[in-house]
Length: 250
Ligand SMILES: [Zn+2]
Ligand SMILES: [Zn+2]
Image 1 (tube, rainbow, N blue to C red):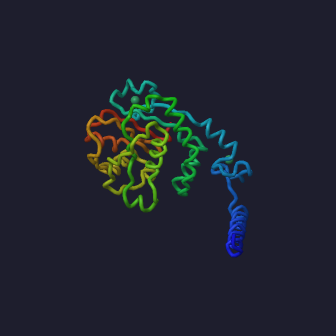
Image 2 (tube, rainbow, N blue to C red):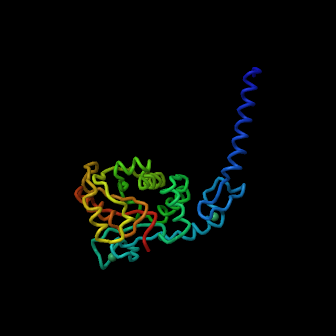
Image 3 (cartoon, helix red, strand yellow):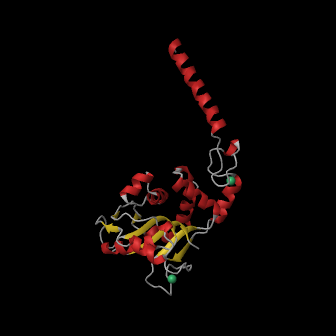
């Protein structure tokens, strides 16, 4: 190696060491949930060991009725025969997973989604019912909200789902957000939430009739947004629809 090249290479190594030490001092890795500093052996993780444990114990995958919230292992609610089933991984009240989704949505920390990855994979393995669908449809954001945030959380979750399924399930943008709505979380009246979201979506003919759809979002609380999306999707005459979210209300 030529002397000049060697000096540049040593200089580069030195620089990368300095920047590593600098980031360790000023930006040490912390647990996304409890904020403690992560130990050296764990510093590439998002969670500390104790929060990783609570994350896994909060994992309670189940099918529930999208109208009454009742558990429906057979995907059919006797009180609401036409209701669309919801499959979700966590209760919204579970602290550690909720901390992660907050870090992801409001601090734009994409790595906060990584702990969900193996659980989606596990769920696909444990629940063969999830493997009969043709496409994933993420709930879209309005273009202006997308610009503001820089990503659509539902789409990123759909991508994890797709990468976890064999063969990878295609993601189809067959729903378009045509109305800019207020944040649903800021509206506390159920009727007003429904009004806010009414007419928010348009169905685009990107799938043939009789397609089986998994509609993807991060959270299912009152369901106003998801149910409006389903109402819109029906114009495309799907064979069946399942809602998939990380979180459910109860
Ligand atoms: Zn922790
Ligand atoms: Zn029901």
